[in-house]
Length: 182
Image (cartoon, rainbow, N blue to C red; front, side, top):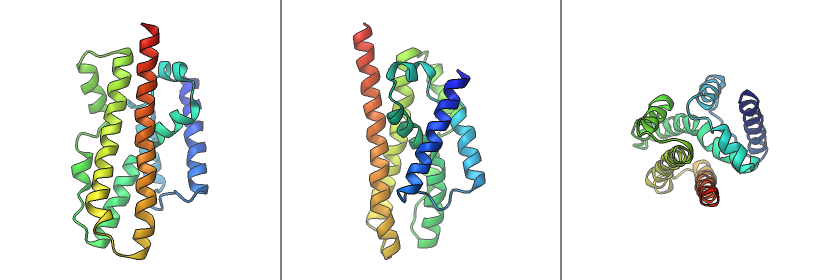
């Protein structure tokens, strides 16, 4: 289990280096944010090792984990941008209930396990990303006027949508595995 977590951490760091090389690095991600995300990532919302064993798709798993990894950093960035631009964006509205321990406990309290838990957990991530995409559409696509912001918003939204689609694809793979197993 520990070796699998280490492998995921390496994959995640590799993905981050690739994203930075592609110009997707978030300028506000400081050491504090990275430390928070690392603890968050290694905690209750880490992908179950059984899912990793079943899927054996490192690239897709890295993308899905990246969606979780930069969510908190993105909220921090959006908050700073909204303050500077005078846009009425409230990250607290997005992050309500987005506690790793609380969300994991809520899922476990439903008595779910195995593939049901995997699916519910990924659904939770996808829903949070969907809310973030909605915030982009509501406050940024329509309200941003500066050239710098216009150049940032659309590519960033496209990247978030790619992560959202990756999670949904992963869910389909899990459900396909269940169907074959049964």
